[in-house]
Amino acid sequence: MINPSSPNQLYDLLRPVKTKKIRLGPKADSGYVVAKDYLPKNLFSYGVGLSCDFEADYINLVPNCSVALFDGTVRAPKNFLDAYPNATFYNNNVYTLDHLGLALQTEESVFVAMDIEGSEFTVFKNTETLQLENIISKIQQLCIEVHLENKDYIEIFQLLHLFQQHFYLVHIHGNNHRKQTIWNLPICIELTYINKSCFLQEVVYDNTPCPVEGLDYPCEPFTEDLSLNWWC
Image (tube, rainbow, N blue to C red):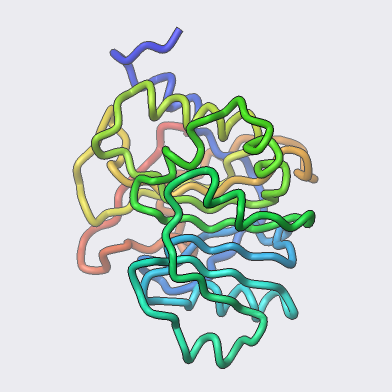
């Protein structure tokens, strides 16, 4: 039974396991900590914003990969597209599962980076559809920023439970743009997942608190980073 009076159930859904990790992108907002051994040849990046540094680092690490960028709030990053001809920019936002499904028509494994300002709840909300199961089965690695503001406990639990069913959480970091918390969690939290179907290591829980030196950096560089350690 879901118990909104306690954050313990949420904590149980947010226990990272060990794997080799590196950081791609800037040492600030829009950088991601990723699992080094799970980088497929297809990258789908939702909510690119003004920086393509993460995508550039990914391409340099995975040569000849295919990259699809999605953002309806910014212009096409011409310099980036000129430098990386295997990248395609789509000037639209992702608000529903249908939008995500249309983008993931490939039959190959994909890496998904997602920062869509709360719409992640809408995209993943229908957990019973075959379409969602098909999409999730293709996502080898998922880096997602989950926005908890204006979400109730059950919504948050259901989304994190869905992820736990299909993925192992391998990294967690709090976005320090806002100090506000909800059920003792950062109002905006960055999560890195690996699909259970392709996880190659023994599952061992990681007891390293966040931020991790050399991997994590504050999203707001002039503000102290958030300390997270409930899994220790």
